Length: 212
Ligand SMILES: [Fe+2]
Image (cartoon, rainbow, N blue to C red; front, side, top):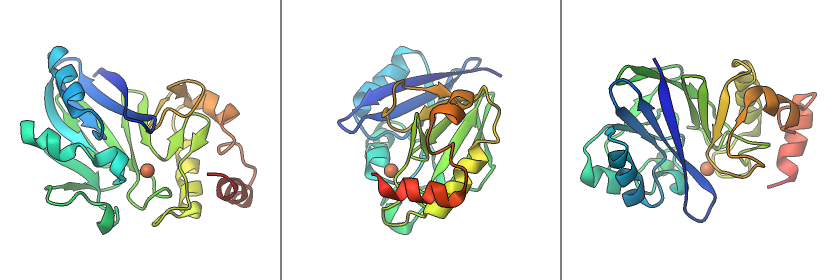
């Protein structure tokens, strides 16, 4: 199975939105549609893809705001972590709740949901074909804030420790373009990301809670 990952930068918060496309069937998944939905959907059509589903890394508005607009044009399932806070679940939208390690079939590709709480209780990453779409869990040279409602800095530490066990060649595709490059390998991030190089959990907590 091979997948093509398209990365888009829309909106005024440096968000990254993604389309995961199955190269064989042209089925596709749209991740975190929140900004410029017409642009995203036109892009899917221009690339001759079929929108099969929407995947949400978590429930903050800058990741979910465009879901309703997408559903107005395409009736597709919307997947979100079963652990997300009620207050962060999009209202009036039917949601398919995922469990940790659940695999979602998109055409001939499998997308694995890794639950990574910390930034919010329902944070999840999507692993597909050596790429990891990380939402607000892991950024290039950064990680998500842990001082928001529902955040838990100890959970974030555990989530990042878990991501560090993935193959080094995994390409990190973050939810915001805050770093020196829009994506990076996990191998490189384990050297340059100050939140992945902490000696202890206490060191991580100190660092994470000191800065925004
Ligand atoms: Fe967020």
